[in-house]
Length: 87
Image 1: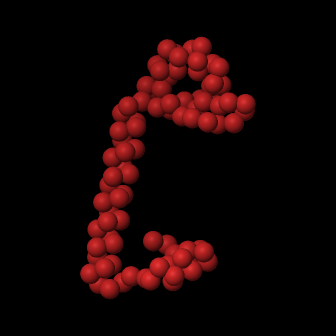
Image 2: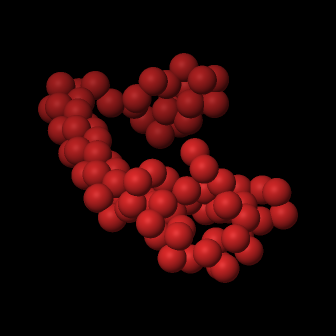
Image 3: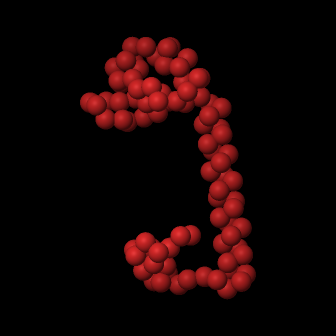
Protein backbone atom coordinates (compact mmCIF):
# COMPACT_ATOMS: atom_id res chain seq x y z
CA UNK A 1 0.00 0.00 0.00
CA UNK A 2 1.31 3.40 -0.91
CA UNK A 3 1.96 5.72 2.01
CA UNK A 4 1.89 9.51 2.12
CA UNK A 5 2.73 11.76 5.02
CA UNK A 6 -0.07 13.93 6.36
CA UNK A 7 1.71 16.95 4.89
CA UNK A 8 1.97 15.29 1.46
CA UNK A 9 -1.72 14.37 1.62
CA UNK A 10 -2.57 17.99 2.43
CA UNK A 11 -0.42 19.57 -0.26
CA UNK A 12 -1.20 16.93 -2.91
CA UNK A 13 -4.88 16.39 -2.11
CA UNK A 14 -6.01 16.17 -5.73
CA UNK A 15 -3.35 13.55 -6.45
CA UNK A 16 -4.35 11.66 -3.29
CA UNK A 17 -7.95 11.46 -4.48
CA UNK A 18 -6.84 10.15 -7.88
CA UNK A 19 -4.58 7.53 -6.28
CA UNK A 20 -7.33 6.43 -3.91
CA UNK A 21 -9.54 5.63 -6.92
CA UNK A 22 -6.97 3.00 -7.92
CA UNK A 23 -5.91 1.61 -4.53
CA UNK A 24 -6.07 2.48 -0.82
CA UNK A 25 -3.53 5.07 0.31
CA UNK A 26 -2.17 5.10 3.86
CA UNK A 27 -1.59 8.44 5.57
CA UNK A 28 1.07 8.65 8.26
CA UNK A 29 1.84 11.33 10.80
CA UNK A 30 5.13 11.43 12.69
CA UNK A 31 6.00 8.10 11.09
CA UNK A 32 2.89 6.31 12.37
CA UNK A 33 -0.08 5.21 10.24
CA UNK A 34 -3.17 7.25 11.15
CA UNK A 35 -5.63 6.87 8.25
CA UNK A 36 -6.39 5.16 4.98
CA UNK A 37 -8.09 6.87 2.05
CA UNK A 38 -9.98 4.60 -0.32
CA UNK A 39 -12.49 4.84 -3.13
CA UNK A 40 -16.21 4.90 -2.49
CA UNK A 41 -16.53 1.59 -4.36
CA UNK A 42 -14.01 -0.08 -2.07
CA UNK A 43 -15.65 1.40 1.03
CA UNK A 44 -19.10 0.24 -0.13
CA UNK A 45 -17.73 -3.25 -0.72
CA UNK A 46 -16.30 -3.39 2.78
CA UNK A 47 -19.58 -2.20 4.29
CA UNK A 48 -21.47 -4.84 2.32
CA UNK A 49 -19.15 -7.57 3.61
CA UNK A 50 -19.61 -6.35 7.18
CA UNK A 51 -23.39 -6.46 6.77
CA UNK A 52 -23.24 -9.99 5.35
CA UNK A 53 -21.11 -11.14 8.29
CA UNK A 54 -23.50 -9.54 10.78
CA UNK A 55 -26.47 -11.22 9.09
CA UNK A 56 -24.69 -14.61 9.19
CA UNK A 57 -23.85 -14.20 12.86
CA UNK A 58 -27.42 -13.17 13.64
CA UNK A 59 -28.75 -16.30 11.92
CA UNK A 60 -26.21 -18.45 13.77
CA UNK A 61 -27.24 -16.89 17.09
CA UNK A 62 -30.91 -17.56 16.32
CA UNK A 63 -30.08 -21.20 15.51
CA UNK A 64 -27.99 -21.54 18.68
CA UNK A 65 -30.87 -20.20 20.77
CA UNK A 66 -33.38 -22.44 19.00
CA UNK A 67 -31.16 -25.50 19.61
CA UNK A 68 -30.37 -24.46 23.20
CA UNK A 69 -26.67 -24.15 22.39
CA UNK A 70 -25.94 -21.05 24.43
CA UNK A 71 -23.54 -20.18 27.22
CA UNK A 72 -24.28 -18.14 30.28
CA UNK A 73 -22.35 -14.88 30.45
CA UNK A 74 -19.78 -16.03 33.01
CA UNK A 75 -18.92 -19.20 31.07
CA UNK A 76 -18.63 -17.19 27.86
CA UNK A 77 -16.15 -14.73 29.36
CA UNK A 78 -14.20 -17.54 31.03
CA UNK A 79 -13.78 -19.26 27.66
CA UNK A 80 -12.99 -15.97 25.98
CA UNK A 81 -10.25 -15.17 28.50
CA UNK A 82 -8.75 -18.63 28.02
CA UNK A 83 -8.81 -18.17 24.25
CA UNK A 84 -11.11 -21.16 23.79
CA UNK A 85 -14.16 -19.38 22.40
CA UNK A 86 -14.23 -19.53 18.60
CA UNK A 87 -17.64 -17.92 18.09
